[in-house]
Image 1: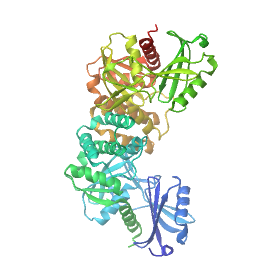
Image 2 (image 1 turned 45 degrees about the vertical axis):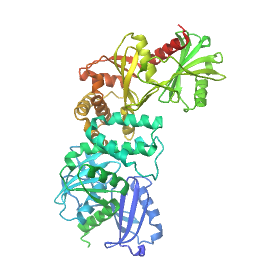
Image 3 (image 1 turned 90 degrees about the vertical axis):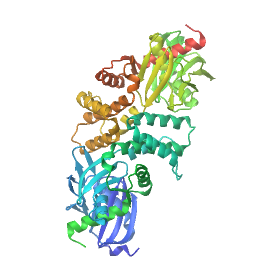
Image 4 (image 1 turned 30 degrees about the vertical axis):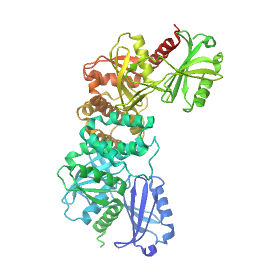
Amino acid sequence: MTNPAKADWLAVEWFENRLSVWAMQGSTVLDTATGAAIGDSVDALIQSLTQLVASWGLSARLPTVVAGWPEAAWRAVPCSAVADKTAAQPDENFNLQFIPGLRQSEPSGLLHGAETRIAGFLSLNKDWDGVICLPGATSVWAQVSAGEVVSFQGFLTGELIATLGADGPAPENTALDDTAFDEALSDGLSRPERLAGRLASLRADRMIGDMPAPTVQARLAGTLIGAELAAARPYWLGQSLAVIGPEAEASLYMRALAQQGAPATQADAKRMALAGICAVRRATTGAG
Amino acid sequence: MTNPAKADWLAVEWFENRLSVWAMQGSTVLDTATGAAIGDSVDALIQSLTQLVASWGLSARLPTVVAGWPEAAWRAVPCSAVADKTAAQPDENFNLQFIPGLRQSEPSGLLHGAETRIAGFLSLNKDWDGVICLPGATSVWAQVSAGEVVSFQGFLTGELIATLGADGPAPENTALDDTAFDEALSDGLSRPERLAGRLASLRADRMIGDMPAPTVQARLAGTLIGAELAAARPYWLGQSLAVIGPEAEASLYMRALAQQGAPATQADAKRMALAGICAVRRATTGAG
């Protein structure tokens, strides 16, 4: 990394209570930092940011473009993936510029952060049309055409996996039980209406204790992702597909889609976030 | 209430971390007490019990028949609803006798407590055959014939309602939004595979804040109970039905079943628990 003190702006992503910061000189990354976000007020954001970049020796009041801020304004879909405006909130340390999220009224939906990752993917894949899946606490399927987000649908899959998996021993750093995942996925896809019943059976399996924890966890993930794929079928069937996420979650969706004969392009979430923030900065300032 | 010091045995139900105790003289209730259970070890149970009955002036080592104990042994279904054996664990204060739960291998399922409520219902409704629904953190549908529990299926509906409803303002002591419940129920029943997507939309509705909290809560309950009824259809369609639960939860299921042209008998959970514990005591001691 180069000396971050030379940064002329900061790129920031707030995502699921984690904060990522990039010290930028034009389109060059000088340094990066990540940490837990302390809260969801602007004051808390500034405090978290200040701590994260304390050692960088930054100039004061750098333009600081923030993606994923939950309190940011919304744009209504359909609209361009790249925001053409940010909401400025200057502070004595940072010249904050919030990228708006996306809002859909039918079905009700909110994105804050996913839209910028999508914008990043499109900035790196010009003229790409298709459907982008973004796994997370809420996973998102977004239909993209001619640089616009046309519509999207969220699923609470990630949060359900975390919540329902939290009462048993977590299978940490163990390989996924592929067979258990595949079986549960196939079952979840073919009979999604049995979801709540399957979850109760998995709870019982966990309590009985005969089934290894990684197997229970793989079946939980497979069951829930299977039900999601069943409901999202209109989104992925016969479409160009991309999956943007952290490696662990994205690889489950890649595996699941491949099983259904629907191969997808995989892209890294952080890299897409940064590319999206850069695209918004170019669109709003004319900077290169 | 009569003087509980005259009790010759105690009936106890442990259910979802709550403890209910009845001071019994034969089949007569002398006094009752309920409280939070401190933990799920036998020592913690004894400590909780000791506190709850401290003012009763009981004799030491009373027979204490406990239903719903999560660490109790299991019987495999199909089997009689009324347990014919309890597991004795005498202590210097209480002569504990644990009623075994039920276990099913396909689909995996465990009951601890529901089986005794079922036994109570059958002891009060001789020769009743049909299906009993027991709402709770895990709701249970049990098929009952000739005094036996033939099979059952659990659904994680109650826990999902509590978990997913916990991140918003709780609509306390407000009437249910009937219209919102009915619409969500009907939708959940007809397209259960959309469950995870609907939950994400409800989360967005809650965050946008345009929809009143009781409406969001009613839609959450309707959606999840609808999906449960869709999956449990083979259990309730064309069957004699009973719903055993606390008033609030049971009334939602009664309403939902009535909408589907499937009226049910409603019975109070605590009353059925006590009747079941009495039935087990009669079966295991020959006491009247």
